[in-house]
Image 1 (spheres, rainbow, N blue to C red):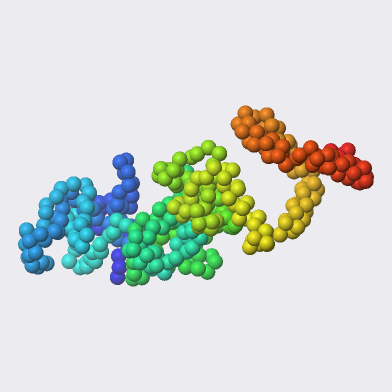
Image 2: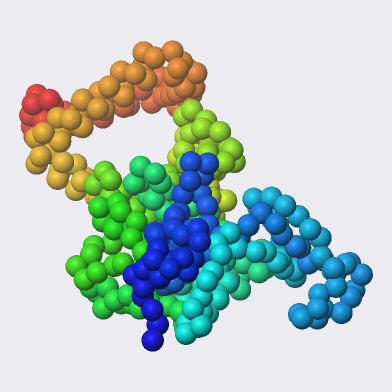
Length: 386
């Protein structure tokens, strides 16, 4: 039978089967992250010592597993070692093992990469897609990069570069069934984040445990991600913009908007975002959104006007929101005509109006307004109410 972790712990502590022995999984140190070691529900993870033999075979010697040629190796000592492509290293374990004659031990190589899931596991990406790990691994071989989601140290969902996507076979995986009927296959030592922020290994999950969710909802064509530590939805393209700022892709330019380069609002890969001047960004999208039928667009001015009218009517029914909207518009208008930052814009607007409103046009406009006011009691009442 396969012996459980308590048996390993008992043999190690009472009979010295493993020395030195860690009676739990050790995952972090004061100097940063480490490859975990110690006892777990899946066995015991050994540590590699500082002495390494790096296989290079510069002399093209015959590789005999029972009689290695010393010239095929380079001796190296250090806490870390870089394994060359198509190569391997030999190492000894820190722990000394005294395995009883009646016990058989199976030694498995442990990757420093997160080879924790089966190939058919789907991964949510910030471009709106959810490919399988197997698909990602094959696409990564051609140099493609992937960005997904993770939780930072404050429990906030952030955009993350998913480096070196890999997968493993099914032989050593646990099947975890979710309450929606779906299943996840993961290695027993893979950590899952629970809803209360704890990191729990797959082997230690129990019925009724609640896992941290990833909720992605569309809003006005954009993707919104639920922030569990704050309780509200946040635009994914802003998270991707934060990734670009953190990695120095561009600077946080004042009075700028985040622009999707390919005009696909759901493609939030960081390379698809750039900072644009706010006014230029609005003009760009207005030119596309309000292209009339006659110019090959799908914009209907009449339908657009009716939609705006309907929106204002709904707004007027909510007195609190309507007053807040009026105050906001008043502040914008006041700022435009008083703030020095808008001096150039004001000058351009005055010049534009002066060229359009000739003395004759101004007189005709005065007559139209006077007639409309005189012949429309309802309009006079609305103006009086304001």
